[in-house]
Length: 84
Image 1 (cartoon, rainbow, N blue to C red):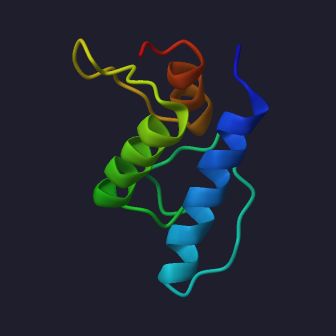
Image 2: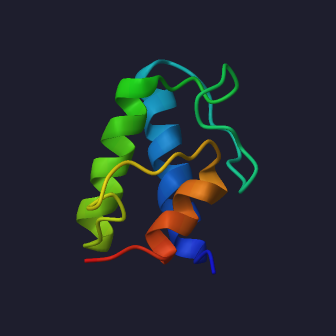
């Protein structure tokens, strides 16, 4: 189950990164691909997003290794199902 606050955190972070780059706000949905031209974030931004989610949620879904994800919904689901 994807918790709405995970998606809110992802959307907030994406839009903070966009604002830092002089880009406008966008809506981030579960189907939003995180590394495409639409979001305006790069792999370093995405890594920072993952770390921020780990800190805010006190969870580490990657403790046993990397898990592939492409969309905001897939990332949110990892934190909904993540382990401490």
